[in-house]
Image (cartoon, rainbow, N blue to C red; front, side, top):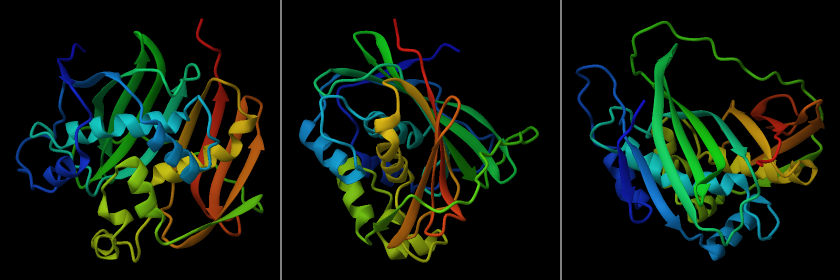
Length: 289
C-alpha cells in the first residue's frame, strides 16, 4: 500500500496529543485509521534522558541503546497518528496486548535516527478491534530496528470474523528474583518515557478504567525484563512480548527466565510464579550484512 508521508521537524508533544484523544468521536460509519506515515528525520538522541531511562529500567549505561528505548522514541508518533481526526481509534481506553521488536544491529547513542511510523491491520477481535502501531528506525537509510505494538480497542466493531490469537504458554515456577515496585514508579517512568496516560499515575483515573490503583506501564515491565536477560542475548534479536495481566502499584513481582533452542524465554509473574503479567520470547537474528 502506497502511503503519503507527513514529515515532522521534531517529536510531537505528547500531552496535547493525548488530550485530543479524549475528544469523543462520532460512532457513525466504519472504524478508520490514518493511511499516512509520520516521519522524523535526523533525530539527535538525548543522552541525559537515555541515561535516566537506563537507570530506571535496569539497563547498563553504555554507548549502544536498548531496543525498548527506540520504542520510546517512536511512541510520540504513535500518539500523533491516533489523535488525528482521521482516526476513530483512541489510545485512551485501548489495551496494549503485545509487542514485537527486532534489533537488526546495535544502535549507538550518538547516531542520528530517522523514525517512521504508521498504523495498519485494523481487524476484528472478540472484544473489539485490534490495530498495529508499526515503527521503523533507520540510520543513513539502513533499517536498524523494527517494532509492532498491537492494541485492543474495546467496543469497536470491525466487519469480519475474529481471528484466534495465539498465546504463549506459562509453566508456573519459582521466580529467580523478586522486584519491589514502589507506588511512584509510574510517575518515574512517565518522566523518562513521556507517556502521559493518567492510569499509570492517578488513582482516580485508574478507577475510571476499572483498576483499583494505578498500573505500571507495560513497556516499563518489558524493558525491565529484557534488561535482566540481555547479558545472555546475542547482539541482534527479535523479542516478542504478550501483556497478560496489569501490575497494580505498589507491587512485588517475580522474574523467571530459561534458555530455549532458539534463544531465551522469560516471564514477569506474581511473587509465587503462578500468574503471569508478561510473557517474553527472544530469538537470535543473523546480523545485517
